[in-house]
Length: 279
Image (cartoon, rainbow, N blue to C red):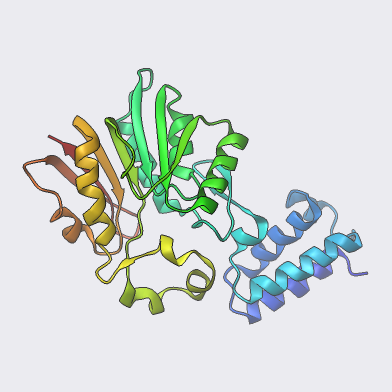
């Protein structure tokens, strides 16, 4: 049987030939995961030989990763704001840029006072759960249309010890409010952009959680009026934005209802997060 050193070299070569980014690191993550070990174990025991079951898992995972399956769906987890979240193909993989939504929301959430907040389209629950854990005095409600996503979100909340009320509904339709803050990372990709997405995204992540419609702003157009009706005066709406969508989303914010509107740019310079206060 091959040693861990040999397996890593062969797997990294396979992934590199398949065009997978960071092939060596990916191979290390998958091998460590198949062994239920930390990556440091691979360096401490390069001549060790894996058991047959671990080798079978690793070989299968390398083949699937080479075929385009995202690493996170193979390991079943993704780190977000310093915590590991369970992910499956039923939910989007949490992205680092979505942490900007958390950061903006935390600035507007008091540390030691009661506060009501809602996360719309929760997916894996990463926003709702993170905010509930960072602000334990907040009462957190999270919604999603898809039962499979809510199942994952509930499991993440239980495992991480977060108190969140999960509801199956479209946006905020059956959620009465009032809320002090509403966050959302909604679908914001236009139909015409679908073919330009990475193959991994197109073939494996849930399309309904990505595509908003012909323009890409359809979900914002429905959510913003609902948020205005459910936020208390002075409450905040924090939205993740799609590429170059800031202007179109701003235009949906009626200045008789909203003020203090601002956007924040990510490391690539894109306007990634929008904040607006209910008048």
